[in-house]
Length: 170
Ligand code: NI
Image (cartoon, rainbow, N blue to C red; front, side):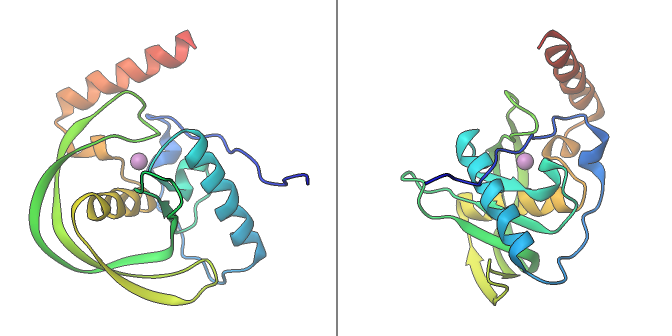
């Protein structure tokens, strides 16, 4: 059977399109479901554990995450919203839009999130550890924020230069 899924291009930092606020999804329809399928294929192929729609140049509030080792536990969140946050913890993060760069980032430790699933059905979940980090990281993308934005100007400039150089040489 022919697959109609497609690999999408991932925007690479410092692409200015990574800094645009995404809009809410009004209706979870077949267009959104196709986008989610394409996003998941793109994320698994990269490979990565999380992807937000703005990273594939779609300014809509959709994130997908799979932190399982078997890569069979896709979490889809449409219009995700953090409604409670407790504690703080520092973990190393990376991002498909900033390949090869890792940094310690401080975030909320435990979060409660409200979202819609890929059928548009609302749900809530409580997350801690890696899942909590991933959700916060991906929601940042919806707000035009990349994890390196938490770093000092000096570090960020160094990363920017490195990324631009890599892209020139590609
Ligand atoms: Ni990212």
